[in-house]
Length: 296
Image (cartoon, rainbow, N blue to C red; front, side, top):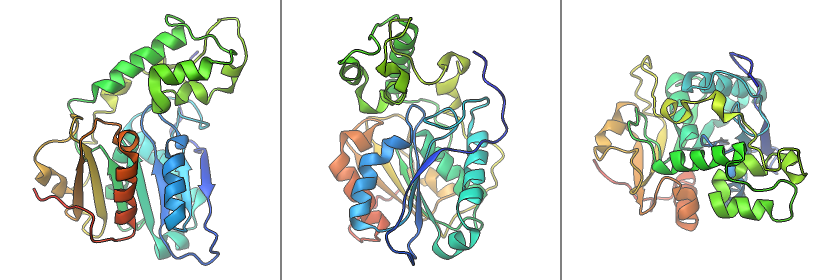
């Protein structure tokens, strides 16, 4: 199977609409990680909705969830798709009046940060929540990604067999990969039926993207040196994850109005420490002063 090349695509998304027809609060856009989908944020969105009555968009990036599958897949292209989505889906006057908040995890966080820099003073990005991802090249990526990517490939190729169509296939998949890394199997409805291969398949032909993890380490080299002084950024850092430098002053290059909160977790901190992480995010979104801020 060879995927087509597309410069921009229409992204699939789910909208939780505010019950207030005259809502003036910023619009939230969720941006998932490299092996996730818009469903990554289902639990967090339920918690947010209980306290913040606003419009919440959860998108599927290209090659994820229900969005089109195609080449290429790099940060510049993902950002182009996001720009296209915002311009096509959200009224420009609404963006101007209410503003946008990005909540991103891993790859999605980096896309949100890039978009904030490139669209500064255009999309009115008021806040960004970056879950375990800084705004620069990350030479070392969490080993959990490479490990689970290898397991996903073995399952997809039938080197590790979980039989499709059985009553227990989802349970077996979740036990092996956990909820986040299982999503690419769980979202593929054909796995609910037996097939000629005798095993479950992954929704994306991963072998068409052999450099996927390395590509996600990058940071665009031609970004303008914009300081997004009007955008508040909350960086959530897992201390057992290798992506952040100990020098937090590096974050000031583009985001001087930042806060950093550390967690004793790995890269998937939102799932490892959901009650604490979600509380920190909610307090930040609601401008509560008790959100911890760490100095350089």
